Amino acid sequence: MSAESGIRTFRDSNGLWEEYRVEDVATYEAWKRNQAMVLEFYNQRRKQLSEVRPNSGHLALVRLEEKFNVQIITQNVDDLHERAGSHHVLHLHGELKKARSTVDPDLIYELKGWELKQGDLCEKGSQLRPHIVWFGEEVPMIEPAQLLVQTADILLVIGTSLNVYPAAGLLYYVNPGTPIYYIDPKGKTIPGFGTLTVINENAGTAVPTLVDTLLNTFTKE
Image (cartoon, rainbow, N blue to C red; front, top):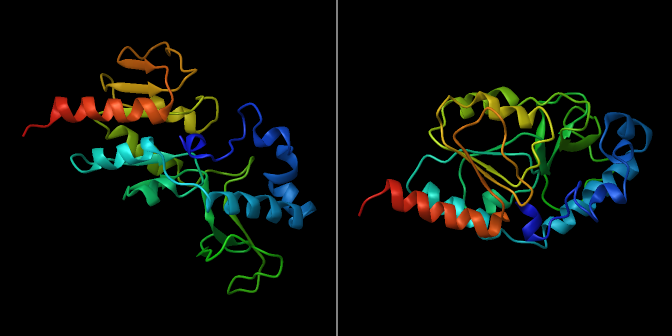
């Protein structure tokens, strides 16, 4: 979803992985090996984030929240959902605009600017690291996300390849019979999900249209 706002993704053509190896910027081993490079990588991601805005897909979900209990589970680490006006956003893979202690993962700080530097310390005197779930690390918010999916009356799956686990596995926690809408230009039907509707469009186009349909179907004047 964020790609349509201008956020560079990792796996698409011309994505970040074509410039950076995952082993160099998105693992704990990379952090131990070259803190300066890792910090600069995420500094540039924050700088770019400050230059973009939420798109029509983000804004459509805010309209949906005006009538329904909308809980967003995102793999994205930006704050575009929040900036659009969504109030219930669970970040599976961390948050770009936050930093955390390297000795106490519960010490999490809001960053005031786009730079996190060597020498920026937590209250316990330890270097701050990006508040990002790197490859090979546990995903601490996966269980709360599973519980949310289990309570869903309707599930929207937006702009994901469904190739990254454990996030992709959330689909299997939905209750049988729950309507699922899968929006992605390359989305495909998934065996075993008879209530799944695939919409092969970009989020910026498909989400507003689907939101209009849901509002017209389930709300009355």
